[in-house]
Image 1 (tube, chains in turn cyan, yellow):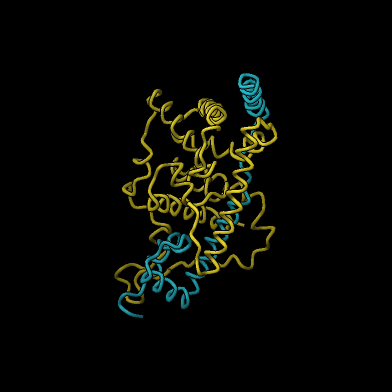
Image 2 (tube, chains in turn brown, green):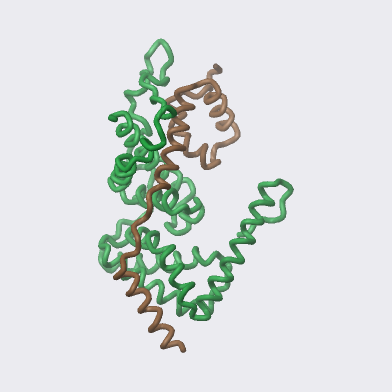
Amino acid sequence: MSATALRCQELVELVTDYLEGALSPGDLRRFEEHIALCDACTEYLRQLRETIRLVGAITPDDLTPEAESELLGLFASWKAGSG
Amino acid sequence: MYPLEGATPEAAEAQAAAAVAAAEDRRLVQGLRDGDEAVYTELVRRWHPAMVRVARMYVRDRGVAEEVVQETWLAVLQGIDRFEARSSLKTWVFRILTNRAKTRGVREARTVPFSALAGAADGDEPAVPEDRFLGAEDPRAPGAWATPPRSWAALPEERLEARETLDCIRMAIADLPDAQRTVIALRDIDGWTAAEVRDALEITDANQRVLLHRARSKVRMACETELEAA
């Protein structure tokens, strides 16, 4: 490993930038070199991806029937007024 | 913001996706102009959770946030004839929402300016607790994992997606500071792009990433605790 190699503790702080495609070319290279050799960080990255997938499985709160009927009422009166 | 013709397959794909999005926007805008209730209802249902989330960045009370959403729809309907498609319909609607919510927030004197919340200066929050790594003086490999994450690969899918896991994630998200919670919900629950979140919340790209990073790191940690407890 070169003197500029990433430590695991540094890598975990770069994971989001990596997934967002926001790493500089130099950091991207160091990130990929580290991941290629480090099982623990590979697992960490996998867990973060899994976390994102699981968060995506949460359904947002539904529109309540009251809110929906107010918003539809607003539309009806706008339509009547703008007719 | 539609990509120019590009040489790479990615650019071509992005361009095709943008064309589809633009056509979809034209359909929606026309629907609203025509007073098509089905189109209006579709949009209300699709965007409502995100609209309430964004409004609540500026007004604390959920009821007030719902009022802001109503005012926004009224403004959208009244202004749709003047919409010129210089941005996406979604960006335009959320810009109206943000402006209304800010005005309301100021009136209620709640305002913690978002940029202050979003600042990177709110202390060190490591993605993983320090004690999971070897110390700086460690002769082996400073900064390497001392307690590495245990593999989730062997966990059955049912375990990962169990109600307990999802409840734990929901709680972890609810416990996040406002700005982090809003960003992770918009990105990972509502499926917004980084640019859409940046525009709606009026923050920088870098801030968006810092907030997302902190939020996702904490949620991963909550999942880890939950999954290892089983």
